[in-house]
Each structure stands twice: as structure tokens, then as C-alpha cells.
Length: 262
Picture 1: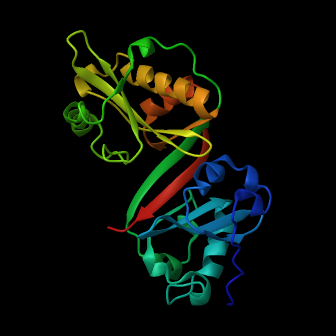
Picture 2: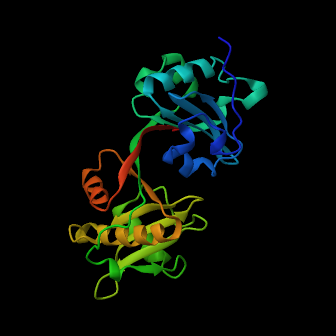
């Protein structure tokens, strides 16, 4: 089968409708370097480079339609068109609408060869959160002076976080107890159209006191005043976090299944 022609969008306005208005795509698009795209109004597949040394597939839309796009793009030798996009063996991660992987041809899945799996949701809000107890006590942290404490909270409460202390441009916030000990943290990164939250964590012994809600509310309020939109990702099976974020006004914008290299 001849692979479909790839689009070379310079901005989201070059994408077919309805994707220029899709919040998940808009939130991420400017972080990709020279993406290629295949698809139509039902599903769209991107081959992008979020970092110079990493290629990624990002897919949105209806699972069946997205699986069909993948089957048309990926050939058994691992590439859609060498002249257009190089070799898909460079892909280290693929994030597709949840349900798409179940419909993929086994040959396509085998070519991708990405065994590590996670299910997560992308959430967003453009409304300030309701007043939340404790958020007025949340303070900006110093990533150098407070590094040891931040790392200790991450190690105890959120060791698999994707937002790490060495992330360039990240800002860190925290809640301290009466003795000055750091008990809850969160971080933000600036994107072109939003502030993205990550590494929200509360020391296990201090959970159930609303500290995560306080830190999240404070960061969300600041992000809304900065860009008008705040986004975050959460594992799909994290029911307590889902209740917290829903209470603060977040809504699911994309359900994702991500496969990575081992």
C-alpha cells in the first residue's frame, strides 16, 4: 500500500478541521520540531521530535480511524517513506487515543516495538479554582536552596514523576508545616498557550489533609492568570487525584495510552 501523503504543518492552522481547535494538540504542538502529520477529520497521526534525540508518535481522534492511519503509514521495514520522514525505528514513545492499540495490526505493533505501557488522561481548565483551604500558605520554592527537600518529597511520594528537578524553566511550589518542614510540592512548566502542572506530591504521612489540593489550587490560579489555561496529566487509575482535579475544575481533554521503549 502506498503511504498517504504527509502534511508538514508549520502551525495548528495548517491542520484539517477540527484539529486546529483541539486543546490537546494546541497545548503540545509548539514543543515539536518540524512535525509530519497524516489523517483527516476523524483521526490525525503526528511524527514529531519533542527533543532533538527523540522521535515520537502522537495520535488523536477515533481509535478505529487512527489505527487505520497507522496501518497505512507504517510499513514492515519500519518507515512510512524514507524520503519524507526517515525511519520509525527512531521512535522512542507513541501516545495514541486510548483504545487504538487494541485495534492495531500485530505487524504494526511489532514494528513499533514499544513494550512499556501506561494509561493516562490529559486534563485542562481555563477557570480559576474555587477557594481552597491552605492554598494561601503555598510558597514558591528555590530549586537550588530547596533541592534536597524537594527530592526527598518526590522520592517518598511520587518517585516516577516525569517532572524532575533538573527540568529547565520549571518553577516549584510547596506547603510547609508549622516547623518549616516541606510536606507537599508541585511544579509548573510554561508552554505557549498554557501552564502545565506536574510532580504534585504529598508526603504519605500527611495525606488526607488537603495539601495536594492546596498546592494544585495555588498553581492553577497562578497559571490561569498567566496564560488563561492550565493543563496536567494523570494516570487513568488514580481515582483520588481524579476527584481532586475534578473538584478544582479540570476536565478530561484526551484519554491516552502511551507505549515506550523498555
